[in-house]
Image (tube, rainbow, N blue to C red; front, side, top):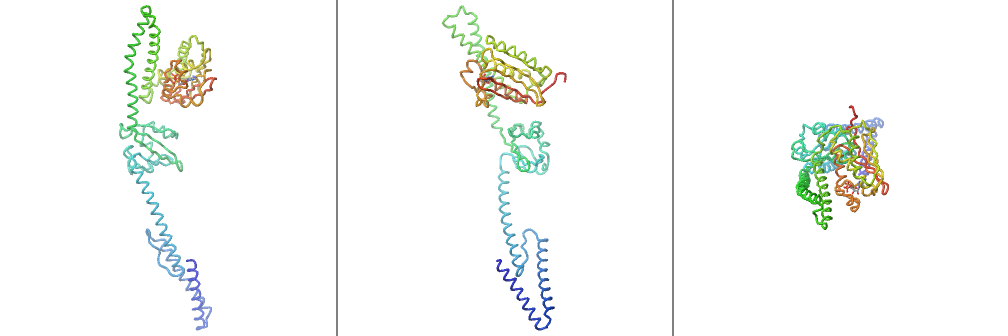
Length: 435
Ligand code: ADP
C-alpha cells in the first residue's frame, strides 16, 4: 500500500512536470507554466483537504469518508478502514457491557454503584425490589437519604466494611437483608445486598429451639433437684449406700441448672440487638460486689483479689447484663488460677474509651485457642474445665453482652504465666459521675 501511494505521487509529479515542459516548449514560458502547474496542483490538494475537513466536522454516526483519487484516495481509504475497525471494536465492547449489565440486572441480589461521596450512580432491578430505589428519580441521590436506618448510616459513615451488616428491608419488614460494601477504583463504593430471610428464619428457629428446650427442661430439673435436696436434708433416713449417689446427683443437677440458665441468658441476649435499659451503671460498686462473690467462690483457695477502679466513671448499659459479663471474667480468673494466685481487676478510661481488665496469674491459654475461646462450648482442655464445673458458655455470654454495649474483648495470655481479659468500651458508652 505504502509503495502504491508513493508510486502514484511520483507518477503525478512526473506527469505534471512533463505537461509543464511540453507547454513551456510550446509557449516558451517555462517559469510561468511551472508556477501555474504547481499552483493548480496545490489548489487541488487544498480542495481535497477541505473535503476531508468538512467530512470530519459534519459526519453523522458512522458515515463513510468521501471518495478520493491518488494520494488522497489512499488517505481516505485508510481512514475508512480505521473507522470500520473502530466500529467492530466498539460493537464487541458494547456487547460485553450489555452482557455484564444484563446479567447484573438479572441477579437476585441487589447491586448498587455509588460514587466516592455515596451518591447513587447505577443499580439493578433487584435493588428496586429490595430497597425501593426508583429509576431514574433516585439517580445522584445520597444513599443515606434513601436508607435512613441509623444502623446503616453508622455503618456507611464508619468506612469499616470488613463485616457485613444485617437489617430489615426498608420496603418490607419481613425481609432480612445483608449489606456488603466494597471500595474500588477512585474510592467509589460497590454495594451488594442479599436477601437472607430464609437463613435468618433458620437461625431464628435454632435460637427458639434452644430457648424452648432450655425452658421446658427447667421445671422437671427443679422438681428432681427439689426432691434430692429434701432427701439429703433428711440424711439420717437415707440408706448410707445411696448417700454418695444422691450427692453426685445433686451436684450434676446443679451443673445442669447452671447450663440451662446460661443457655436461657444467651437466648435472651440474642433476641434483641440492644440492651433493654441504657442507664448509667456504677461499675465501681458492681465490681466491689463481684469481688465479694469471687472471694466466696475462692473460699479455702485464698486468692488475692485486688481492685483498682475509677469511682467517677460510669457506663451506659444494662446492669444485669454487665454483671454477668464481668462476673464471668472474674470467676474464670478464680477457677483457672491456682490457690493463692493473684487476680487484679482494673476499671479506667482514656481517650479511646473505658476499659475493664481482669488479670490473673493462672494457667494461661495457648495462643492457638485464643481466636475460638468465645465460641459456645469451646474448651481449651475438657478435663480442666469439667473439674471447675464451668458450662463452656461463659465467654460466649461475655462476647454477646459486650457486642450489645458496642464493646469488644481482647485476650492476652501466656501459658503458665496468666491471662488478661480486657473489655474496651467506646467513649459514647461512658458517663462521668455528675454528668
Ligand atoms: P467455662 O464455663 O468452661 O469456664 P468459658 O466460656 O468461661 O467456659 O471459658 C472457655 C474456656 O476458656 C475455659 O474452658 C478455659 O479453658 C478458658 N479460660 C477462660 N478464662 C480463663 C482464664 N482466666 N485462664 C485460663 N483459661 C481460661
